[in-house]
Image (tube, rainbow, N blue to C red):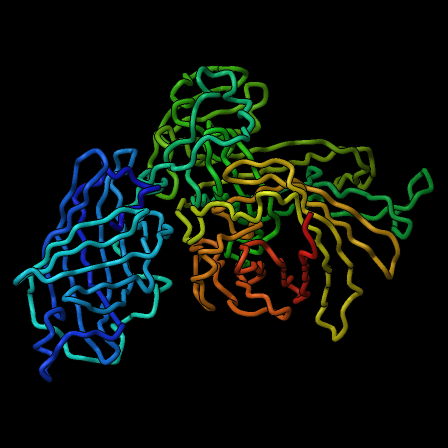
Length: 606
């Protein structure tokens, strides 16, 4: 019982520590003598639970059952904390909680779960489990029975009374009524600076294979590697990104052709002066969400944010999907490949090793740069394969007319222009999405795609809005994998007031551990309530929450998931019955308070 069969091998479970409070609500035939002391079920019970496995082995662990009687019948609260061993040999911490209800007949208390959840602490995610039954029968001064169901198996229970029953009450147990959004659970220690490798991969071989990274494609065994243990659905990598460009002219004033300029040269054309040099810079974040992992591919969502919180709040500026081979990509490389590299020149790249420090953490690192022109470099952690830092620079020359400040004469000149980009690892963490490990809904079995309708609007906060743009398009599923979909997203914007149209197309991916995918598992939508906060990013400040759970204008039951920051927000509405996407809305507020809203609606399927 309470063992996630699809997640952990039963034969590897050990040291399960369980605390159970049984409940009931239905009327009971138990005789009473006017005092709750006559109730033979109510009270605190402690004993032993025993799980028997198919191979004949078993595990035993302590169990406590707290039962009480109210005017409505029996009720109690169920909580559990389990320690188990996963397929990888690593320990897992699991928390079970819920409520049961039932009644008695012939000295047997029979109950059924009213709600319950099985929560993996390291993932901060829930596993899907069916309803459980619990039966207890008196045998002298003790009770024995079993709990579970036919699919997950049964646990045998033997318990002894520990204390008198609590008083009758119509009030529910403290905190009852369903799972809380942010339970206070003990956290497993996380590795400093790098992702924790505690949770094993559980997905099987897929049908789509990602491309090999060209840098490592020639290394032995690269094509056969699976992803490192920490690369798992729901993992989020955050990198700080900065860029700067400089346009200079050696301190000399340059002339730019301008019909209204004050300078007239020998060619008869007019020019204006420009400053001796100028530059610009920007900073922000790049976040990579790992949304699916198979033996053949790793699927990622990349989000770009302009603004790193120093001068302006991070504003979402771009999104794209990435498909890579499990051996690595530009953000991480399998450590087995890094360990094959030796200092020197390999396959046209210079390789070096040594210590490297990021965010106060010291790493053993591998530095890789092109041999031809040392204009770029990447630094990887040798132990995890995670990208720690990268940088690139470029230089160019442009011809112009310049004025010599010493003589005041103009003459041909050149400008030395440069651009530099740097990135630095910030953090890695597991996001808190309750649907991250659920399977694809049945509605996608024969679905080829969606037809879309929508609009693009700009409000300049001047009392009137600019003419909107009508959007139409479709999402066509181009490739299928058991764990994710590849699709082409085509959109056409029609400019009614100006005439003409513009069409764009891009390839995206949809997978379970995704924010804003084409689906959310219906069994998860069924237990989401308005206002529940699902995740909050400590770097960008963006929160993922349930904006609304209820009836839409067309009468359909929907759940609206919102990703909200200070400068932008996105909303996705899902049909609660099928789990399929209904609408998506993106809203961005520019520094001048101009609001841009893009809305897409699913108007059909094919």
